[in-house]
Amino acid sequence: MMEEKLLKTGTTTLGIICKDGVVLAAERKATMGYLVASKNAEKILPLNSRLAMTTAGLVGDAQAIERIMKAELKLYEYQEERKPSVRAAAYLLANLLYSRRYYPFYVQLLVGGFDDKPRLYSFDPSGSIQEENEFFSTGSGSPIALGVLEEKFKKGVTVEEAKKMAAKAIKSAVQRDIASGGSGIDIMVIDKDGIKKVKDSEVQELAG
View: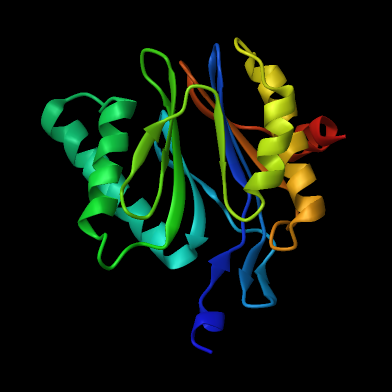
């Protein structure tokens, strides 16, 4: 009974490596048992001006990780007088997850960012980390999204191509995974100029 009262995200999120950036995408439904708790949950969380994290799992755990990561990254920036690399931030997150492996955060995360090139990392609750060179998806709808990405992805894909691919993959997951949905799809692009959220009107056009 207690399990059903926890706010969860039966989720689909994904990340795609492009030749000129990283594209992150997610739908917006958050569930609490069989109740749709929110149709506008934010599942792509910027951590600094060139780094963002997608979240699947317990919302409270994801929000706690967001707060810790933002604080740690800001401290690093003050002490070193520069932003941490995407790899350094990713391993900081992996260490945070590993330190809680016996009482884990119930999350599955992606971190995407841009330093000298676009980068994407995936994590499990135990702190396992994997750098992804093409794409990855998390959450209950990920098998459906991965099927779309497997078919459509090609090396050297542009950001514009990846945005359309991401919208199609999330839309497919929403249509088949009962825990994915909400009021729309969020897409963020991270490149040398920073993080940019794609407008809802453009996302609707991309999804078709």
